[in-house]
Image 1 (cartoon, rainbow, N blue to C red):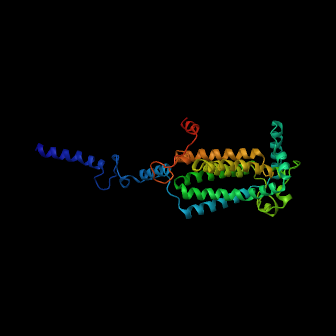
Image 2 (cartoon, rainbow, N blue to C red; image 1 turned 30 degrees about the vertical axis):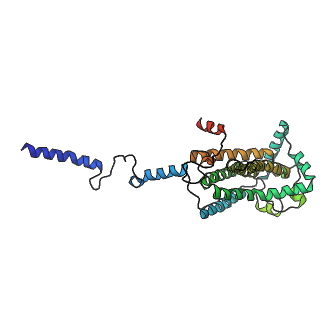
Image 3 (cartoon, helix red, strand yellow; image 1 turned 90 degrees about the horizontal axis):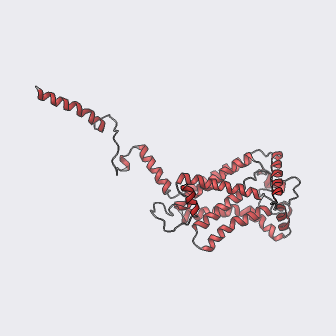
Length: 317
C-alpha cells in the first residue's frame, strides 16, 4: 500500500515543477533563457531591446528613399513652424536693442564697422550676398550626400545631430524674436541685398514676404556650417580638406556679420544649439556620432577618428 502512495506523491510534486518549466500546455514559461540563446528563443521585449542596442552601437545602412523623404518633410515642417511664429516686431526690436547695447557696453560691438567696411567693396559684398543665399543649403546637402555614400554607419547619428540642432533653433525663434541688424531701428546698418539688388536671399526683397524676418536667434547659418565643418574635419582624410572644413564656418561668420543678417551673438546661439544636438545624440548612441563604425556591422573602423581627449573625459565624468 505504501508504494502507490510514494508514486502519487512524486507525481504531485513533479506537476508544479513541470508547470514552472513551461512544459505543461497553456502555462507560461518563466525561467530565464540560458546564455547564448538565439534571438528567436527570446521574448519579444528582449529581442526588441537587443535590436535597439545593436542599432545604437552600429546603426543600419540608411535607405535612400527614407532619407530623402525625411529631409524633405523635416525641412517643410521647419519652414512651416519658423514662418508660423508671430512676427512680433516690437519685441524683436526691443531684443535687438538689448543685444546691441550689451555688446557696446562690453566693447565688442563690431558688426556695424564690418558691415560698412565690406559694403564699400562692391564685388566682395555681392559675393557674400550670394554666399549667404546659396551655400547654406548647397554645402549642407553636399555633406549629407558624402556621409551617406562614404560613412553610412555614421550617417544616421550625424544627421540626427543636425535635426536636433534645427529643432532647438525653432524654440529660440519662438521665444526670442530678434530683428537682424539690417532691420534694427536706428542701427544705421546697410541691408546689402537691398542696396546691391542681389537675388536669392529670403531675408530681403520679394522673398521676405514668405520668410519670418525676426527669426534671427539662433543663427542656423552658423549651426549648419559648423556641423558641416566638424563633420568634414573629423571624417575627411586629406589634411587640406579638413582645414577647409574648419574654414567654412569661420567664413560664414564673417558673411552673416558683413551682410547685417545677424549679430555675432546669434552665432553663439547657433553654437550652443549644435552642442546640445551633439550631446543629445551621444545619449542616444552612447558614443559621439563620429566614433561609430564607418560601415554598419564593422567591429572596428578602418578609418580611425581622432576625437579630442577632453570629449571622452567629460563624457566619462
